[in-house]
Length: 340
Image 1 (cartoon, rainbow, N blue to C red):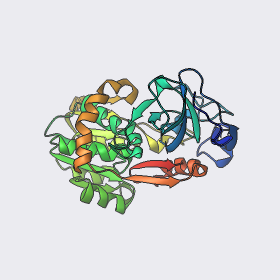
Image 2: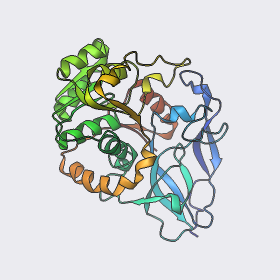
Image 3: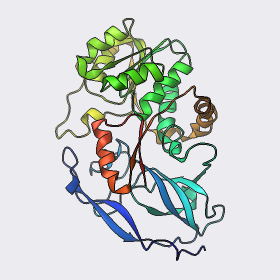
Image 4: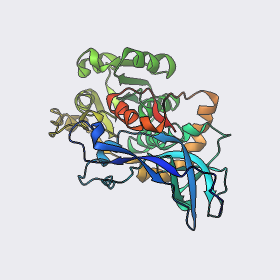
């Protein structure tokens, strides 16, 4: 057991104080100080360096039945984090090692060694293990290549394309031989990023007019794959442009996460009959078997600059909540990360 007397006495962390109705409000959360616990047998104490905030966390703030347990009221929330081991009571992990784990929203975390993944800060910046080489990257890879059954020559449409997942989906499709890659985003600046830096063939600002019209103009011959991060009018537009045998993979629907009433469904679902199209939802947790293949293929693309990524970094754990709300607003370009 490593001596921890040189560490601070308290850790700051974010608790869920009440379940948000509609848009989350600051009073739904509490920023508190707690005593830093000691690691027990098989555990390590980690000083978190980077924290992830992601759209799916909004769902965990509700107590509705879902694929993952909701956050508990009055207790610290969770999320992806990467940090340095500062005390160890576990074989295989030593002080100074860096690990990826799931106990974010706090400065210090006691993590079971079996739930910590050792990462190499020399191989890639630590923050990338939360984004382009982490869960969001694997989400893009698995959703496009496995769930959407992407094949060379497909025309691919990605909504939320300037986000952490969407930007990687479009670039992987391009690197894998897509005939055409189209993205939607919420600002002209993000549209330019998609075309000029990420190599999309076309992109549009969904605020400039009906999505269905802009998509038809960008993909006059239709689309074969739609990677959905937004839902709503984007999903309806994609169904309207779907080619025969087209595939729609539902990764997220950020447009409806804060709705207090059920959103109307697409009005043109009957078109799936004529196109023999399919819509399938997926969770990255069902595809962790692809992780080694994903890293082998994607890491060299990142290292060579063939696959580009952006990060929006917010400084200070005290701003963790504002960073999360920023994701829901679409403030981020690429992965939203909090530097503790």
